[in-house]
Image (cartoon, rainbow, N blue to C red):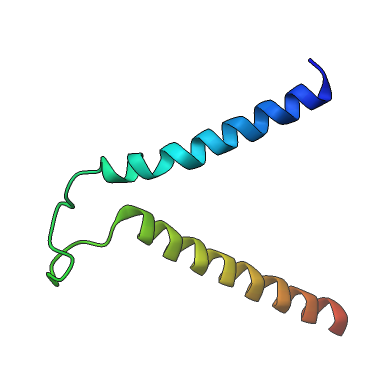
Length: 73
């Protein structure tokens, strides 16, 4: 397959995905609970993002402390 055909295929697939993706969003059902209800649990994805942010912050703090300790030696 030539380079031009590969690029044309990729562009067509990207265009097709962009055109069909909104229909996948419409096909989703109703949420499990009312978002305004204070007892509604936090979605699993949001809790993973929060955990990842805490992890990245802890890693940056650890690296900064390690760098300070190495320069003091």
